[in-house]
Image (cartoon, rainbow, N blue to C red):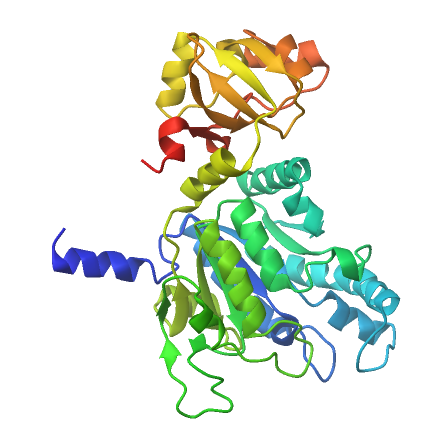
Length: 388
């Protein structure tokens, strides 16, 4: 590759253009007017225009949105300042309804359906719940909806909370194998020091990995509705980059912030060393302990080598006691382990559908279930685990 081609490839990483799947995190300070407690409707409508444009270009878009507590506290006449946990939960319960309606109205102008999803940390970190949440979100995207995700503040306690939506957004991005995480902020990226205090602070347009030196550049969160700040954004960056997802911190106060990013607006791009799907497969291969083995016939083994999913028709035996969402070995007819995958069925149900056609699954099990025993995205073959 010549020098110009290399430069073009580098620049293509610093834009939303051509992104396959994007998670956009929106903070309370951007979405909610700090004086009135009302949603900034015109700003949200401009954001909806940008989301529609991205979708028209073939990009899946997910939203992780703060704001439910900020909106709800006004309608419950809760005082300004710090709230007790139960007050936050009450505010979130009423604010989340208004928030969902606001997104619904803004995106309905483009004929886009909105789906609300509320998560707690266990939904993205516990294996089986992770699989359920991932499956639901991917199905919504397949059906053309825009998922609007928030932390389930009405039930989460301080001990089982993400604590901020920057990290929640990063968890969601890695869960759905997004290739870009957008953190809309009150600043246009990371600086070598806090630009509000140091006029000599230098903007960093590109960051390759988050080192202790990079972490030392983070300042504190501004006063107001925000619970994050640059510290939590860098924490989110660690999660996203580990999952192979690019992250960008961009100024969100302007109208059409996503459009500006597509056109190369000033921002800080954090670039991972691997792609999202490769990172997911490495995680499956290296971090999950197999609970059993599914042996496949020669035809299925060859199909897996071509990047296909494992269907019931190609499986010939099951060993071990695993549940849906557990990791299992996949072995060829000669017993050689081909890779490790996340099973969509329990060992018992897998045994019942061995060698059967996908269309027979519902009649045999009494429920429809997934079409594949292991989806190709959830299968790390031996050569993939090695990064080859």
